[in-house]
Length: 529
Image (cartoon, rainbow, N blue to C red; front, side, top):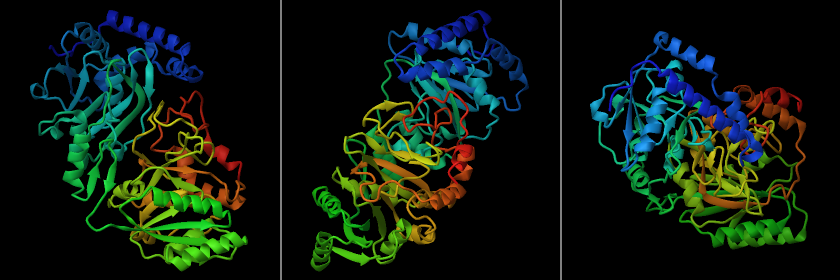
């Protein structure tokens, strides 16, 4: 195919722009929640004047990468190919070539698209004008042709690639990285993962997939990556779950604070027995002043049978101090901080968490928690959401597509809830445990922020799934001092945003929705201190 290096075709360009605006208006009337995506499109499509400005500005950009685009064709796809070619002819950045194979080009950046995929007219200009030279990978947000099923992606999340090629769509790689053949783009990304040092995410919908594309994660590609980079102690299941299964079973200290409500602890422990894992459990119960005879009797029975170590904590409740005590009295290599109002739902859930907690680059691991009605309660914490920090996707049905992608994928996140949180003992000690200035809330997020600052990633795996009967024990009243200490720790994220939550999504609700107005979560959070 010829190189498209000439100036933008003005007639085709105008037709495409007018078509895009018609689709945006139609999307505003469509079935999307609250018509939010149609509204977002109407506000973010570049104007005719802006696109003309880009055409004029392209020759003067400080960084003008040559871009090779490889179009993968299917039999009988002439009409689809014409749509792709038309969108390329309308690009406001001209330094690109269209190829049928990687070997035929020499551009600095290389991308792969299917016939029928289309690019927004400002897609390549957005990448070049970012000035992100010397970057290994560029990627952007996307939807399906016709402005359906939008996907506002997170910042660079290497562990999410173990679930699916979430980068998807228009990904541009530095040509020097393509030094070996590959069968799929997911396999390519996983092979390159140890070599990707600088990744650039453009938080704008610049790519429109062909409607019949169904991205399916490749278990074979994930298994190849895990075997090559993680070693023999991991198993990749048919559903893509990754489990830690070394020859010698690891030992996990499960630390559970409580004050009475013994029926919750019974349910929690019964679920651990019914949903076994290969890992050995050292059970630590920290009793914070229980008064009910049934509680004392059950805890005495646990201790006498050797099933658990029961530690008294008679002082005023302090979640951080209680868990620090449990960690100090345990001997296990891994620590799992678990609420008494949590029940395991999936076999091997502990091994799924250990698959990440055992990795040296991972700091803290969380699970996918469900409300009793089966909707999601926790798939990771987003800084600034609903004020200070909130649970992404809370209230969303599982196995559903959302504005931030599918609910059942492995995710990197900034923090996870202490209701079910795992880390290596060595890391817990390196971080000096939970900050005991926090009484009830905030120290779980704060320790994740310290782990991130120390260079570790946080992960939530959906292959560890539990029910959380949230706040059944102590209610929801939060001390003002917790807000004050939280604000001090969270302030940079309240000001600059959460790197794992797309800045085009609203922080006012845990249900993902496009952001349609300016949101100042820093000022909002100040109201509580």
